[in-house]
Image 1 (cartoon, rainbow, N blue to C red):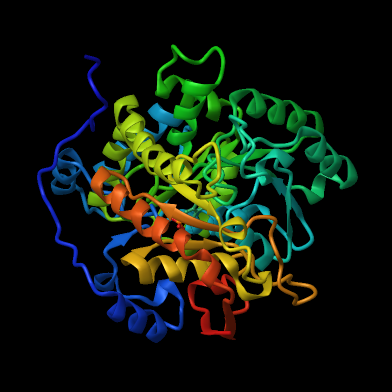
Image 2: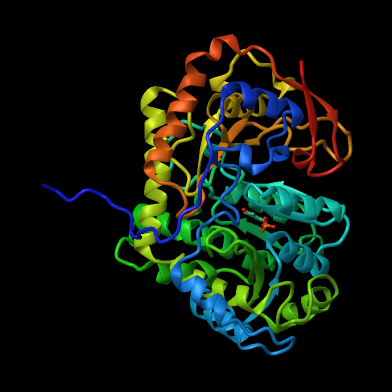
Length: 458
Ligand SMILES: *Cc1c(COP(=O)(O)O)cnc(C)c1O
């Protein structure tokens, strides 16, 4: 008999979670103004709001916490992290920040001005927020295949090279401070970018003299997909692939809360000393001194260890295998999910799931509320609420895709939880014809509104 797949770790510590009744959940979500971010976590049974900072640290990471050096300047924890970043990514210079968007804030402060154009592949919401906050523009050059949720394509995060060239051709070099390549693409479904595409982006960027920065939150998951899907990489190790990926970049921003499996943290990696020097000023201003930048010594130690664990093949196989396990259950039942499955989450195509809800009534949010009421499972809307309003016209932006993202925390839930999630969503699917209306906005913030928006039933 062939040995079945099994997790590459065992459990040493557990945390209780509580079930609730449908009646309780209906009341709680109304009190939360139908915003899943407003629910206190004790009301949630399986929490798939995000895979960001929600992972379980290992015994080795917890041991590293005890070895943290909390010196203000020049802590050994800083040097340990610096060595790990150099070893894994190849970047000589780095700045610690308290999380990924802080890395964006510091880097963009040193590089982006009003009126600038920042091409990329499905910029993440905080990235776009930081670009638009500076009155610059993010231009999405993702391949069209990414927007067809059922089309099988191994690298739906890829940049469309001709779309990118059009952007680079039609603006002066001074207006394009960088290209941002997101690996994997969170907003388009946790979809990876191939090494071939990274190489082509680099060639084009060199032709026009534009630097490339990787938005690297899930770089290791991207590397795993390259290993299993891209010709010529099947025998390379994850770390070899990661080094090759970053060899095409001038720097990176990192949300360590994702693939580095820590609860808080981030950093910026730089190839060039001038870039590091310019950004350093803003790091000291916004984050903290250069050798801690918003992180405790113990957290830098855990992060250094997490970078190694997050780039192990066995771990990535377990993680991405679990996401695919859930995806397959849903797909086999006929639920419209994005395919191929992403690295960190399953994305449910809400437009296809709830065809009777008008787009003005926030289709994916409506599905998220129904899933919570059904089973106490909390997902997150990746749709019209997240897309914010157009900064110039003030109109809602309706993205091609209305998705409910079920993000799987790292090393936290078992496959029994995956079965539970699937059953909850299947129950909603069975009564989808009865769901014909959604929500309208009572109150919203001018930017990144999805975090705090208040809704009421239409
Ligand atoms: C999470 C994330 C960010 C922002 O990082 P935070 O740590 O949440 O501030 C930026 N880009 C991508 C692709 C992300 O997934």
